[in-house]
Length: 485
RNA sequence: GCCCCCAUCGUCUAGAGGCCUAGGACACGAGCUUUUCAAGCUUGGAACACGAGUUCGAAUCUCGUUGGGGGCACCA
Image 1 (cartoon, protein in one colour):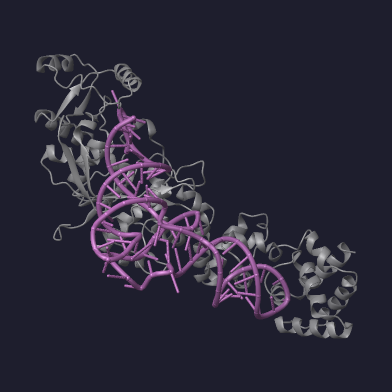
Image 2 (cartoon, protein in one colour; image 1 turned 60 degrees about the vertical axis):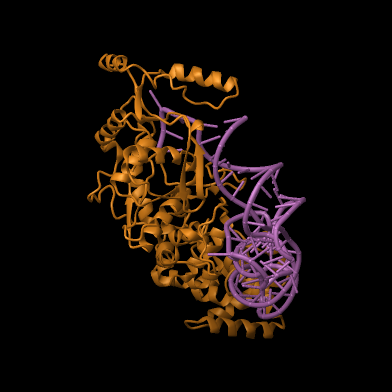
């Protein structure tokens, strides 16, 4: 790396829908690298394929990156000296550069129809050859080209790849990569609709935007020599490359839909914390070299280096993400979790009731070691939000034995005598009652938990009671006695 | 088919020739704790793809094999 050159990197997604978790990691690594080196992180929108454009995708992308804590320094809505940052608004620039290439003899107009191209391809495949453009238009007479252009004939511009020799480049992660020119074909750089292809646009923009390091997915590795060639044709300095290993499905193919969720928005709406997702994704292909696992964005910035990025693809496996989410959730104060829980409740069947913050904070305190997600509060302890409608049959069978009803009645009576009881008061009463009845504590505790929650598992019983309050506790006991007769 | 890349427990990974009887984390099993469930702690099983070299010594270097992935569009 040239030490005196400022670090400028970019994340350049195409706005075709949602942000892919692979994209999130690419964006994250770029961001971390930029911030680690006090550099600039650019967001550039690669919308040169009109047919794949999706309405609102750019705004969604920005919002999602923002949620993840990845903030760009330059990009759409943050115009600086290198804009515009949306490729569809840079068409003029690409045309000029394509023309320049033609003038220098490094590119040419091609009038081949898609039909002819398809025929050629079929023939090549039939002959077991690698499909490649046959360079039919590469050496057309100048006059013919001019006439056909003047006649308005549909055409594209292709780059001229040398027929022999090879191109190699240095990759931060892979080392030196070399590809022979004979296996490269004359790539289209300007489409007949006037839009550039990725190959032209990426080179022109990265150069004009003074990108120092191109950090992108490994799927680009094979076409990088074409880009290097383009840099040479323009007489530009080739940027530093770092091709990131791919994120994989459980079956080790490139991470895709249909094998689980790939959209960051999906994880967000499922209740994953952005810190957890970011931490998790950062560790897919990178690690700090020691045994620390929990990293905030700041710590990641401090520690991240490309040297510590691995080469092999990484399977995106959810269980560890869930664990991380629980770790982050547990680090949050009760009040903050309660706030999210309140929102979650509004959207739930329990939403008709209003819950006050103090109550929710108590619920959070009781349940926080037992949940991984905020939504778990509703699933694992619905009884804090409404009286049990049914009682877990397995628990009834195990815990609600013959004398249970009588014992609960006694307990209910004893509770009724209490004045504004706290957790210890319930405990004292229960123990005293157990002694009076000559019963084991468990003979009261388990049926009582069932009566009050409908379940066999949960926080400490006395915590539950004191959160529900005396009146509600008694009401539930009495209901259970009736229903479980 | 051709080209490029990759290869340590099921998964994420540490390991840059002796520190490796291969470490950590998730997941899984057992135990402790406990009114339940968790959490926590302790603990168990679990990997250097294979074969040749190089070297006194190889998970680490070289070559080959096998396996996997990516790319080969007027998509990015």
